[in-house]
Length: 144
Image (cartoon, rainbow, N blue to C red; front, side, top):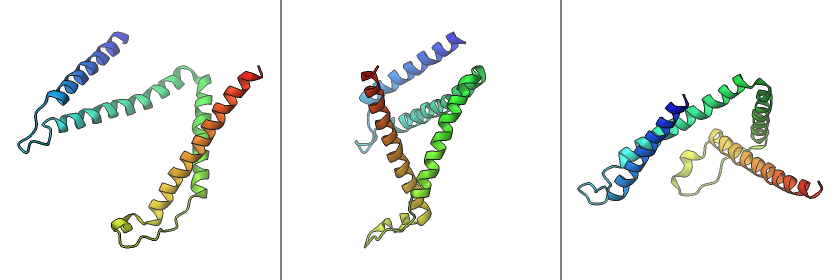
């Protein structure tokens, strides 16, 4: 299994190197400005994103199955994240914005504004928690 994964990594590296060379040496279409291989690059980015998503979903599940004691800690982390999102949703606003003379009215929908505000508040909470954790970890070293 380990050899198969290594071969897969080498294959991805070779494909990435080839596409990198094509990026810098590839020509352009008839108009002279649009690169020929743009669709290939985008498709490869989609493939790499899909591989990353599948790996990020499969490996934690595999880790939980092989080590169930650590699964509790992982599930507590996920539960904490769900609580943060629920709190952010509770504090978010769906109040419409006042746009004058712009084409942004199509985005001025209360349900969309509620989701965006939830994302912003969630980000603020997680950044604050990260800063507090960094300060705590550094100051706790001073007292040990």
